[in-house]
Image (cartoon, rainbow, N blue to C red; front, side, top):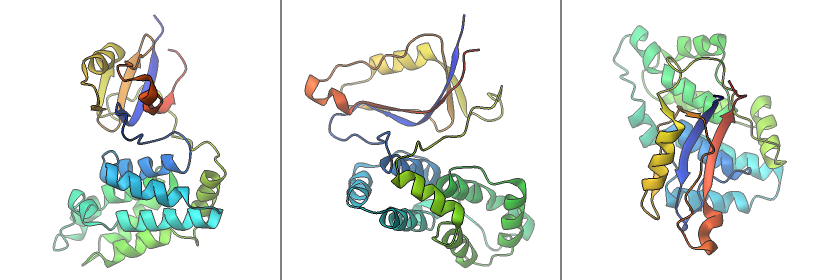
Length: 239
């Protein structure tokens, strides 16, 4: 039997009141930042605010500036620092490892990619000597800025509604890349038993192995059915 690997990103939204995580830029960027920075889906108030801001951005520069504000504020927020704490009295060797998940989140949210080995080692080599948050703040402001050509190029792609590409699934990495692997039948059963108006959430980096069509139950009135969204990062070739 042929199966497909389905890499689900963020969440399945089964609510008619707020459609979070739309598939077209720049709104997809909002969901992406929340997933990478906070490891969670967008809360309604956060979505409403950033959605409104993006909707009113009428130029590439305006979109880029909003992306900068969103990234620079979220990556130095108290929630982010609480999720990725640094003990500045630790040895440089320990801080080297403590900063690692921060750098991963920074690159994934800001440039939509993994840092190269040289980029990672270079940043960690500098950040390990930090005595406070200032070096991290400067790093964020450097990567997410109009002075970074790669970031400017990404913001231009988002503004022009170029497909906001996700990293391809690379081979048999279930055991060391994905946090959990579930069957399509398991996900289908979860959807079928979800309460009306609820949100079905999967862990970030969940791999779903599909051997049949995934059906989102339409148990809402027709007028709110268009608000169903399934965020898919990548669907591989059949194996």
